Image (tube, rainbow, N blue to C red):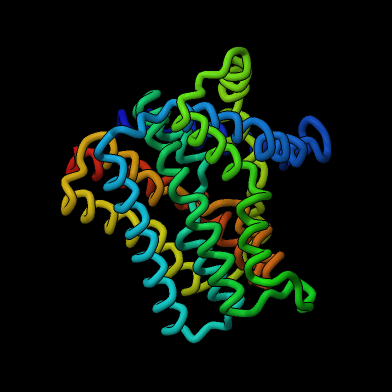
Length: 315
């Protein structure tokens, strides 16, 4: 357990460094928002393209691996819906609870997969991301529109549901890079001379910079009295999601590295992009920001414990 914590600790130390730099406005105001944009639009798409272009899609385990992740997503979502109904919260709060319960920080997942399980773990994490990122984006847009209508933060009507869904897919650079990397891979057109080398170099810079940017995005001042809504969304994220993944891996006979990497998707904090989607589609953006901050802090404990348990029972 101690050695595992030492392996995971560098990931969280980079988050802390990013938070401290932002707090001290180092090296200058606006710098980390620029790094965040660079990571989101260039570095992280390069990493996802690089890894998905290397996946062996002939592996017979892959459909089961994808099914485990998707069924676990459904289970966590049902838990959040039931919790929101039990707490009798308003739709914007319920939709932010849903985001906090089912979204995951892809950057941290890939960093942990690479740190714990090497390049093979990183490829499996990229595969899981290629399954879950489009699925979660479509699911959340549809759910949020159905819950409180396609309205913006000012309450006015915005785009129709089909346009919102297509926009969530087409304008998301992570989804586009996954589609390109997987598509070219399936066509047998990878590696691409020179292009693959450049993208590979960019991907090497992605994880440390992304983790610093994630740390810089944490806003401690957003934490208010979120009460039971945070507790139930955190239970969905850190208990229900990984527990269902573990049970399904056992049920379907998925064990070893694929099972261990699958668990990582369920034990990291929710994605920072949830705040932007809450603002865009009328969710409770301030509460969403608090969820992101609190889950990031909580994951310092949940990640080592959950990884240790997964290695104990799923290896």
